[in-house]
Structure formats: structure tokens, C-alpha cells
Length: 411
Image (cartoon, rainbow, N blue to C red; front, side):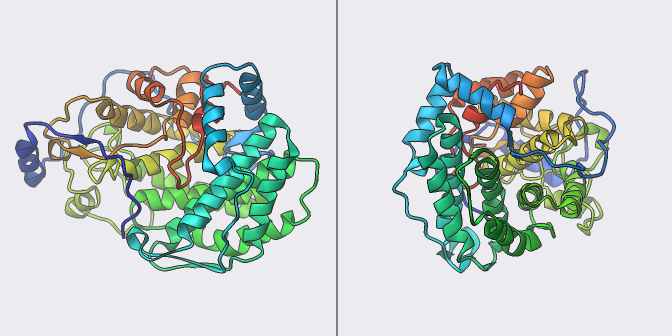
């Protein structure tokens, strides 16, 4: 099953592509040596969910929002430009009319697309408006966000067709971000907030909590939704289950040379033997630090996976269960490897046959801020790409305004 493609395609070609293809066919299983480095890897965090959840606490916290609000009010770069970009977008419109459906039907390549775009974009609009409210403290933005969330919670019952799990994950990742900000910072009241929670519990959580054995970006996006929904619902059992899925999937999505000759496999995947693993990794047989399971598919889907990893780690940190020490080195290496080639470095023949396609999208800010700004790790290529892409906008799926929320944010 395939997902949506970015319209902006980055194609990187090298003269040695033919030699790279021959290398893939030879199936030489050679992990590339890592340069000496200090690593963010450490002992796993405590396994249990927090006794008391922090609100707002899905992707952004109140201290982070306060930092952003102060920077925008001061007209500081890059936050003011990022804010202006957000406010000029269709998602900030106060005249938007929500388009809920009882059944959202999403097929491969969005065919059919019955409510899929509407659902995702209404969720992004609710999140955008919640950010606009917090920064301006103007109640009309919170009220519009509530109107959109209420429209969907009154109507939607299910998602169907082949892309239903991914659609549920994408929309389910964004709704809780908006709901957390509105419920816990808007004092004007939200009478239907319990109905919105019931929607998340009954329509989204049963699908996303099960995970997926499709391409890794599916399970990671679904897990992001499960964790965000669990925070909003204060559901410790679902939170713990989602974190366990995350811990199994990240090492199976991003390779480190310490894994050995072959990448790790996700629990329950059923993958065994080099041929099956190489096929799952898009035919890539030479593994290097930061390679993802979808790098040789395209960088857009790779970006989805990296983004979801960053979002989950950020939410867990806010909730007092910091997963960055556990996944940080994989995330750092993945951001660095993909950013290097996004910045124009020649692709070696032993990497995807010398050809990478598409672009990562606006997905580097959260991981870069966590690992570089807060933890102090050098990330030269990621920094160059992140700063080049500012202000980062939305991918119109589940990523939105992350220069505004996370650029150089120490909170």
C-alpha cells in the first residue's frame, strides 16, 4: 500500500548509479564504520506512564508556548516570520467551514478520497487556530478551533479502505495537539470536550493502538496518534502500550552499525533471514549509520517516519518519561544522513544504487532542537538544512509550523 507523495521532488543522481545497482544485486552485507562521537544513547527510560499527565502536553508544553509567544511579541527571528506564515495560511482562517463525514474512506494514492483531505486539513486548522489563540490570547481563535473539533466529534464514526490505518494515524496525531491547548489554556469553556474525547477513544484509538506491520512510517505515525490520544484521555494503559510499540519499531526503522550486519526487526514482523530483511529495506544491502527502512523508497516517506519519532520523543519528554536518551543517537544519525544528501552531497553508489528521490519535507525542527539546542550535540548537516528551510510550514498531513513551535526552544 502506498501513501501520498510530495509535489516537490528532489532527485539526486550520481554517475555511479549502475555500479550501485550491481552492489545491491551482490547483496554484500557490510555495515559502515561510524566516526568516533559522543552519543545520546543511554539506559532506557522508566517503562511506566506518568502518574499524573502534564497538560498541555502533546508535542508542545505550556513553557514552550510561553517561549514562542514572547518571541513573536518581540518580533524576533525566526519566530515572527514563522508566525506570519502560519497566520497567512488557509488553516488560520476564521471563516473556515469544517467538512466532517461519518465515514472517511481513503484508498491507496488517495483513491478514493472521501473526506481524507478534509479530515487532515480540519485537524491542522484546529491546531493552527489553537496556536494562534495562545500567542494572541484572542478568544475568537479558540472558539473557531472548538467549532471545528465539535463538528467532527458530532459526526465521524469510522475510517475505511486500504489507507484507513494511516489516515487514522495522521489525523489522530494532530487532533490531540489542538485539544490539549484549547482544553487546558482557554478559560472560555469547551462544553463538548468530553464528546471529543469519546471520539478519540472510539474512532481513533482502537485502530492506532494495534500498530502496523506495513512500512515503518505507518506504525510510527499510528503510534504518535496513540500516545497523543492517551495523554488527552489520561489513559495510562494505552500510553504504556504505545511506548512499547515505539521502542520496538525505532530500532527496526533506523540502522546503527552497532546493530550488526543486518538491521533489527520489529517485534511481530515475522521477518527473518537476510533476503526478507533486504527486501523490506527496499533492496538495500549495505547498511550505514542513519539509514532508514524507507530511505531507498524515497525521502518523503522517510521524513514521515523521522517526524513521528521526533514527535513521540518530544511528547514523552513533556510527560516526564524522556525517550530521547534511548532513541537519540538513531534519530541524530537519521537526520544527519538524510540532511547531507538533501543539501546536495553526491550519493555513493552503495546507497540506493546512487539515487535518492523526493525531499524530507518540513520535519527537522523538533529533533534538531531536542538534540542540538537542548542536549548540545553537533549536527552540521541537519542544522544547515533546518536553517535553509525556515520557516518550516506544513506538509498538509500531520506536520505544521515547527519553526514557530520548536526553533531554538530551550523549554
